[in-house]
Image (tube, rainbow over all chains, first blue to last red):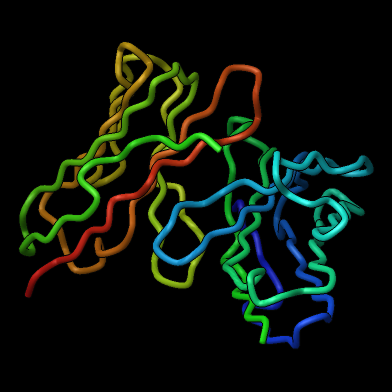
Length: 118
Length: 111
């Protein structure tokens, strides 16, 4: 149990285009989903927290108009990187919490999406 | 954002050796979690700790929640090749659903 998937696993796009990344909780309904960014050889940095049906809460320094988050259901959250630029190239990882039978705050992570902007 | 300090940054050990790493914070956390991340993958939860002083095992892994609530350690006994990866600690404040991640410890096993 507690499986989180992400799609796509990797994407290459041209500068100026938008990219959508999906995060799904496969065997549970997640009360909260989180989006992280990880640069090479660095730790995970939280970008935003989202709850189903409400607006995401962004961390300081993260542009909400550039990183659009939609949490349409208890099993799906999407991150759209708008007008991507090379400096947005990174490893984007989502996590979900609210697993039945587990402590509600324990986060389970997806496999990540590697974004490369040319 | 804030990060937790993990030490050592990297470890080079031989198969069969025991491993010990720790994580320290300047502030108190209510929950400590240990994750392992393989290259190109998301972190996988290894152990969760919810009470100061708690000692929890998961197979060859043992982790403890420091009594000051500002630190935690992870031990791996009799290391095997699949233990290679980056280990992250993460702390959570009471009443705050966000995690703060450590800087990571990279474990390499020398043939």
